[in-house]
Structure formats: structure tokens, C-alpha cells
Length: 347
Image (cartoon, rainbow, N blue to C red):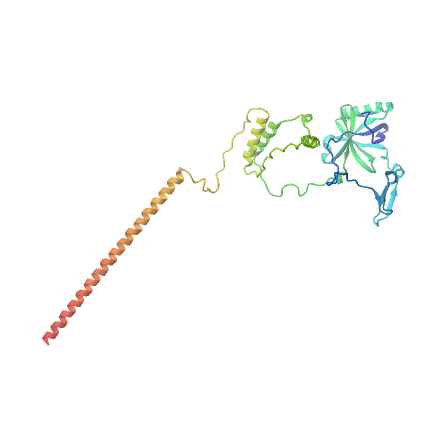
């Protein structure tokens, strides 16, 4: 902690008790940063600060702060102006309340800091505040000014130190409107039971065991490129797809989680498969379907045979009728001819 540079010096106001402190960053970034380069020759791309009135590059010593008014007028603001802000929190972390930790919405949390005691005189009141926070199981809500604006903070105990989390003001947190699904979805008890089983199987984990695999892979690529070697190939990505059966996906997730931990297969009751509303061609390719098809084909053949028989019978009847009619007609004509002959002879 002695090697960490403080970013703010002031005091904690705890009622009438004042505790000199130094504010230091509690976190650090290990991410790999890149530089912009000219692709043609690898030269660095830099941004230069240029005064738009004089059209020349200026140094850091020549750069100050200014507030742009609505009409575009720039109002210079100096560090001395900021140092004399009419606020009690300009150089003081003012504790305004003590509340249970669960009253703080994690969405409000920003950067984290450690509050270091500012010298020997601060040791006693610092320890008093720390032990009071421990015994109360509460956190302190405070207001402080940092980097040009007043902020909200939450003080809590971390081991033997007091940490402070910067908080967003409540009106800076957006409501989650329009984020949740807008369709009506029903989750049944069996699905919840499987989800609970999956949560129990995954269990807890020591956060110290987690590490940034992306950064490690990126370091391998950088090392390979620096050595003039080909970068390592990326493993084949798992193919994602639409989950058609939520229950099957949950059951498989439980089994996979058990196997990854070297445990026995999770005891999950397999739910009966739902009957499909309409059979597909593949689903009808069974013994029953074959038998039905045979019966249907036989019925069709019988019907066709019956039709042929009926047609043949109709043809036979038609021929018989036609023959009878023809014979009757010939008989009638012969009888008429005989009568005519007889009359002629009588005459």
C-alpha cells in the first residue's frame, strides 16, 4: 500500500470525529492495450493537441479547463476555483447515514477505493469507525467531491481496511423497461426443478480460481508474432443453435456439469416425451403403418375388381338386351311381310 500513489487527500467526517485519510485505487487493470499504427510502415499514430485559434500544437502546461456555455462561450475554470468550491465535501468524505448492505443496488456501484489512514493521529478514529462498521453489520453512505463533481460513496470493511465504492446517484440508473421479454411465457415446476438441480450441480466456486483466458490467449498470439512464428490456431467453436427442447437441454446440462466435476450422473427423472400433434412421414414408417398401407392397398384392389365385374355385367346385359331387341324386330318384320303377301294373293 505504501507504493500506491494517493489520488485524493482529505478526511472522513464521522459526526464530530474527523479522520485524516488518503484515497488510493483498490483495483488495477491487467488488460493488454494496443497502439494505433500506420499499416504501410508500422509507424505510431499519435493525436496532437492543437489550439484551433492559433492552429499550433500546445503543451500540457498550456492546457486548462473551460466550461462551454449554451451560446458557445468558453468560461475558464481554474484548479483554484475548484479548490474553493462552496461544498462541505470538497475535501471531506461526509458520512450521512448507516444502512444495511442489501439496501445498495449493485447497479449503482462504480470504482472501488481504499481509505488509508493519514498518519499516526488517524489510527485511533480510523480503527473506531472500522470496528463500528463491523459490529453493526452496516455500511456507511457518504458524499464526497472528486474530479470536478460531487459523488456518492459506500464505505465498508475489507479485512482490516476501510474501502469505499463510488456510487451512481439513483437518478443515473436507468429503469429496465423494455428489456424483459414482452411475450407471455409459462415456466412449470418440473422445469424449475431441473434448473435448481443444475444450479446445485454447478455449486459454488472460489473466485480466486477464475482467470482471464482471453488475455492469456492474446499474450500467446503476441509472443508468437514477436518470435516470428505463426499464431496458435483457435479451437473449433461450438455451433450454437435454437433450443427446441428446453427440458432436454436442462437435463443434458446437469449431466455435463456432473461429468465435468468428476461426479456421478445427476439423478434427474426423465420426463415422458410429448406426443407430436401431427405425425411426420418418418414417424409413420412403422409396423402399424405398413400393415395399414397393405390393408388399404388390398381394399383398393377389391374395389377395382368389383368395378370391373360390374362393368362386365353391364356390357353383358347391354348385349343381351340389344340381341333380344334385334330378334324381336326381325320377327315383327317377318310377320308383317307374311300378312302383306297373303293380302295380295286374296286380292
